[in-house]
Image 1 (cartoon, helix red, strand yellow):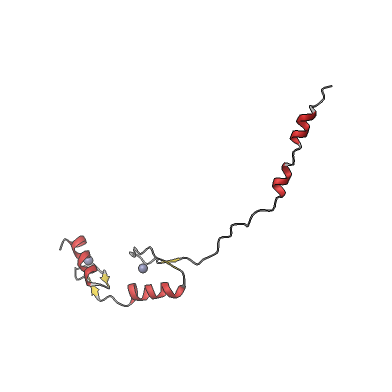
Image 2: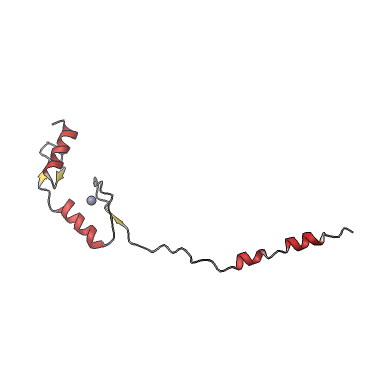
Length: 96
Ligand SMILES: [Zn+2]
Ligand SMILES: [Zn+2]
């Protein structure tokens, strides 16, 4: 008969369970912020919108209404809200 070392037994009975029972610190709650991002095709805005109203305004002003500067190149149906964007696009995509 081998007797288990008393010391070992004592050591193994160290109150490990306590650490399991210890009340967890404030559980890191991830506040469910609505994170809305524009998924408009071709939009490279990385803005995270907090409110739906904000993204709607973005969509409206950037994508829906002001296609004030459509690309005049044949077959290209891009349009831009700003003239300099159109110009940059034409330079980049059409070599003009
Ligand atoms: Zn967008
Ligand atoms: Zn174009």
